[in-house]
Length: 262
Image (cartoon, rainbow, N blue to C red; front, side):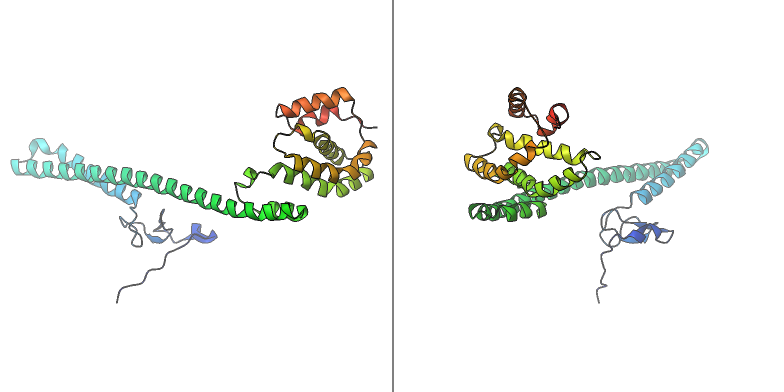
């Protein structure tokens, strides 16, 4: 009956395997360190291959020292030993180079597959985003975006809208802490000021549609007077900030320089 083998997996205890064993760099299985190849997946044990080569090489060097006094037949045997050692060395080098190339190709292929799958998943997520956006469930849209780990979600057409609407959802909490710790902690005040800059400069963001701006303006409107109790901006400062945002400077860039508390 064909012996069944089980693929070994890495665990926290892998580093504690018995001495005299080695962990396969390919499948993770443990096997006798003296074996030339992994008995589970066939991956070459480079350390053992190098060890055997060096042993053969040292033996050849030792024999060559006696070459001058050796009979003709010994010379032939030594030469053959040298050729064998050279052949082993060449094979090892070829295996290492081939394995490295194949490993790089396999790694790149895996990255390409992952990127493709990630993109296909993003397309599916975009459809969910659109459904929530069209029916006005903006809070659910923000929550879906926060739970998604997809690397393409930032390419969604309403991504900036989602970011700004998430700031609106935090405003009540930020305002509460800003009032309670106004004289003790500037973190919440700075966060509020960055938020105010973004909503006062909605027309400066190229990645917002007109519909996005209308929805965000309406959602921010109830908080406008509340912000005025904390901060003041002159028209000139506001114009400078708008120009900076158009030049791709974020709201954080202006927070320290323009934040004037009342």
